[in-house]
Image (cartoon, rainbow, N blue to C red; front, top):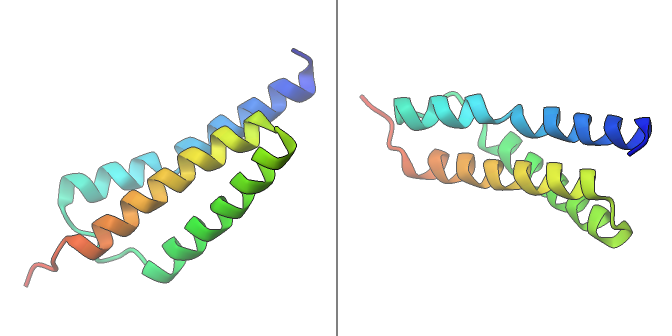
Length: 87
């Protein structure tokens, strides 16, 4: 594995884990009040497009990162639509 592949996989890993703390926080608090649904839908669509691109070109760092981020954004969208606001 050369340094370009290492950079690609490192970037993919770092991009992938950015949503983990947010998913955990929303899950524990059972509140997604401060999340923007519009932003989460845009993130989902953009990662889906990147995922298609990565699959078409067989770019594993792009496939792995965007597949994981796509999954996490779906989870956040689900939380946003499921958790009822506490009054």
